[in-house]
Length: 165
Image 1 (spheres, rainbow, N blue to C red):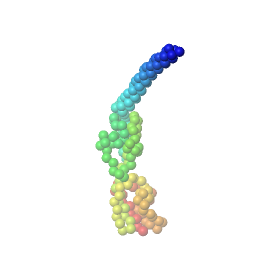
Image 2: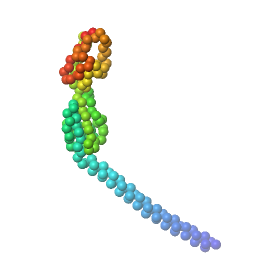
Image 3: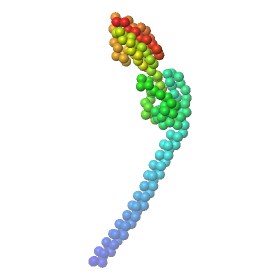
Image 4: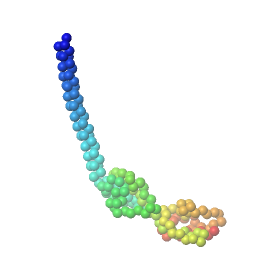
């Protein structure tokens, strides 16, 4: 009986060792497959970012095609030495990833002079109507006020907005 028990324990130990050996083999295989997949995935990301892409750049309505290897809008602006003022408009956001066919639109703010209530103020604002600029600057006008140019006029660089109350 003791002999049978020893044989059983020995057989069990051998089977455990065989199982551990199989697990180690599978573990190594799974690890190799994961590493291979990671290398291929990372390589394809790097490769696609290294391939030049053509993007459409629009500044104040003037469009042109530009080839770049930049990954984001911010990197592209640095590469092309395009500087933005805080009042300028940029679409899409600077942290947006670029791909072939992406579109970057910049609208430059323009200097405008505002004369109201005895004060003259120089501001930079995005082009739009006089009404839009006054709303953005939180300047209210009522029906008795005389605004020049008209509220519906488009603001361009150097426009002087005069409000007579």
